[in-house]
Image (cartoon, rainbow, N blue to C red):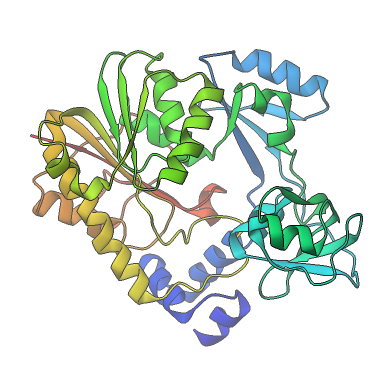
Length: 388
């Protein structure tokens, strides 16, 4: 166990949690090997409020982006992820945080808030971008010097010219700026289809920012109805509002609040469908450079997630739908949370209208799991409940 944890730069607690899911060291190793790499496909969701998949395919191909339509979801497009690429050794380097490093490894540029150390950085420098453990993720050209980074703490700092994995820079595409596409993984798109929102309904998104799933829900509703989009951080809501504006979503109503207390703050709240996509240990995200998750954190997150479902069960109308999803693989944050929702919150498991993953564990066949080494996607979990 110790050797496996060291080889893949994860804690022994992560290995133990995965052993509980997969049962053997060989399969856990296969999972960790997959999670440590990017999947073979990078997905975009076409925003059919503004355009059609065929129009976006034609437009992107004219720009040289080799893009294809997905075989299962009509709004999903994908392009191949190439790599890992060999990065040159350079004398000059900067250190970025884990979140930034994992994005930059897939072609994103470096923005000032993600930089941890940039001693001696000058505008125009060609530098190596490394994660906190010293692993190279990209080569870039400095758009700021050290002083600007430290004083401004915002804006583009390093323009990436070669990354660990080769993916089109989506946020620089005209199609992204015009709100025609939104980068979203395949399992994340499946979530909105499992929720199955209908035009004219009232939908509650309890953890809405940055708005990828909210935008998808609005699209499926044809921009008709109401989406109550909640996040407790005002800064995240501001980013959410920006995304909704770009996507042309007019039915989302942002609310700054802690969703764990919505039933108390809004005693008359009632929704036809509720999406619970709460913070999780994110063990399934890819590519993962390292993972310092402890069992204490997994357990704490499981208890945290249950609080959202408890409130969801109160505010959804009778006969209404609650969908719970995570981008992690642990039983503690998935099937054990499902058990709580059934036994303590009175929700009933419901069959999912779109099922392309694997069945859940511990007898919960109605749940949908995406295993990185099986489905070539991020690790993901989706369950659908109905309130009797």
